[in-house]
Image (cartoon, rainbow, N blue to C red; front, side, top):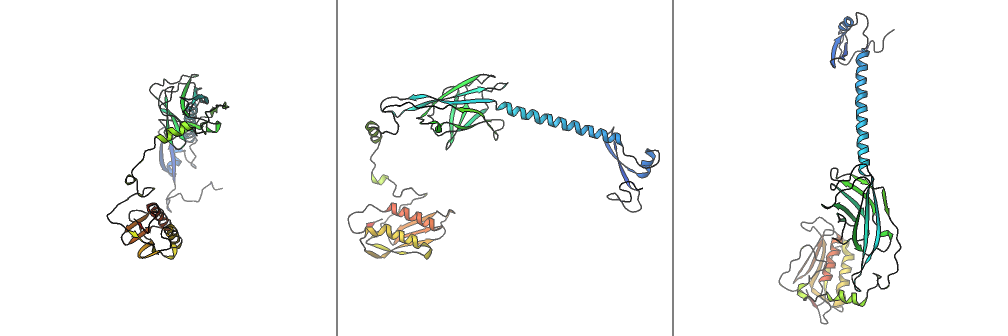
Length: 358
C-alpha cells in the first residue's frame, strides 16, 4: 500500500533526487529541510513520521493568539458602547416676548444624563442633531454652545465652563429659538462624535423629545402681521439712486460696462440656428411689445451655441451689447436662455416714446 502522496514529486523536485521533507524544530521555532536519509536517521530507520509534538505546539500558539485577539475586540466594543451610554431629552419650556411688537421666541432645553460607569469629559466631544427651528446665537446656558453646521444640521459643543458629568449626573442646557409651533420642529437624529475619532458617529438611542400643547396666545400668533410690525419693517427700507443698482439681476459673475449706447427704433433682426428656434421666439416675445410692430433692420440680435471662455457649465453664457446690436453665446441652449433673462432684466421700463436705449 502506498502512503498518501507516494509516487508524486514535491514542488521543485527533480528525477533522481530523494524527496525533501520539512521538519519544524518546536523548541527553536525553526524549519529545517531534511532529505529522506536524514529523516530515516532521526526516526531510527523506516518511514518518516510526522512530528506531532511540533504540530501540537504550533496549534497552541495559534489558539493563544486568537483568544488574545478576541479579548481585544470585546474590550474595544465595550469601550465604544460605554462612550454612547448617554440619555438626551428635549423639551419646550415656554415662550418669551419683549414687547407688543416682538414676534417672540421659544425657550428650549436639552437635559443630558450620563448613564455610563465613567465620567463624560468636559471636552473632546460634540452632539449633532437636525432641527427645523433656528436657534438664537448667544442665548445658550449650561456650558455649551450650539453651532449651525449646514442646512438643518446643528451641533452642541462644550465650552470651558462645562465641568463634565460624573456617572448618574445630569446637565440642563437652555437656549432660545424662533417660535416653535409643533413637535415636528423638535430636534431629531442626535449622535455624538468624539475628537479622537472624528469620522465615527455614535447614535444616541436614549433620546426623547417631550410632546407639548401650545396654549392660545391672543395677539401673539406669529402668522399675524400687525400694523406696528409692518411699520417697523418698512421704516428700515431706504431709497437708493438708480445708478447704484445693478443693471442686471441676478448679478452675473462678471459685468463690464463700456462707453456707447445701442438705440433700437424697432425689433432687431433675430438670427439663430434651428436648435435655438424656441429661444429666438422668446427673444421676439420680450422685445415686440416695446416697438408696436416696428422693425429695425439695421440692428441684429444674434443667438448661437459656442464656447464661453473659462466656463464649462452648460448654463454659462456671454451677453454683448454694442451699437451694432446684441449677441448672446451659450455653451448650450440653456445658457442662451439664461442670457435672454439677463437681456430682459437689462431692458429699461417702457419709456412711453419710440425706441429704447441699451
